[in-house]
Amino acid sequence: MINKSILKKALSIIEQRHKQSENFAYANLKKAMSFEDFKQNYTKLKEIEFENAKNEAYGNDKKIDTKKLENEQEKILLSHNINPLSLIPHYTCTKCDDTGFVNGKMCVCLKHEINNVLSEESGFNHKLMSFDDADLKIFDNSEKMKILYRTMKKWCNEDSKYQIIVLCGQTGVGKTYLMECMANELIQKENIVYFASAFNVNQNLLKYHTTFDNTKYDSLNTLLEPDYLFIDDLGTEPILKNVTVEGIYNIIADRLEHNKKTIISTNLDLENIEQRYGERIFSRLVNKRTSLCFYVENSDLRLKK
Image 1: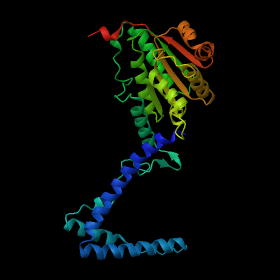
Image 2: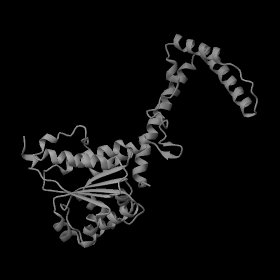
Image 3: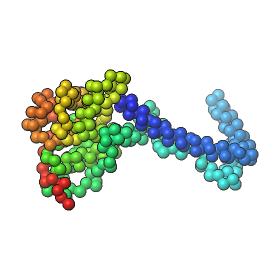
Image 4: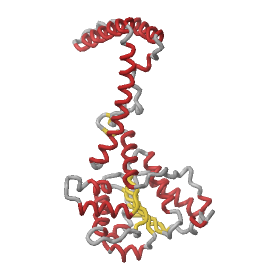
């Protein structure tokens, strides 16, 4: 389950939409009820609908036809310049009627809002790139990048046994660009995604260690619960004693245990990863049964016009 504060924020957005739709329809009904001809017709129609519902509940097949009254109601509304459809709530999401759930399961609209809230909280709230829009001609090794992009797109669209993706390479070679495309693809597939810099991940871990009320686990659950966790620029965050290395290890280990995917970009090579984070983290990042590691080579895209 996604952490309660994130879920609460996302649900409040969905609930607000629901209320707006209901209130708009109610306001139009209230206006229509101010006309006596509509009020009489509407009241009679509701009485018949209630009677039909009661008969059905008692197993009585008798049903009174309401078509004539419905047609009359529409004519009355139009005579008062009121659109008949304006009396019916029009929800943004037709799958769940802006409740956030369908048959007890989280609706795609709620997942979308959760992703928006996660994006805001991580500070990474600009529009993500997509595989379809990616211009691979900007890369020196465009053919190799095409292969890598196809491989990563395939990984995003299948239930791969590989739970960890590590993208190594110098600054500015396109690692974040690729991760954005992956995150976008996964969000479109109705997954919950958290995309954050290693610095922000470190801040979440620090907050977990320095919070002593009932919100203590919120910052940690934000890293543990999403279907996919993207950590950008691992190695640029400061190493905080008893926080960073232990925290990153626990995140990786917990997500592996619960079959959740983690995607990491880093400027470090594998040897430097082991030196900086130790053998426990290193062994999980290079485990051939659960991880894929790629070295991205290009000239610095930031220097190109």
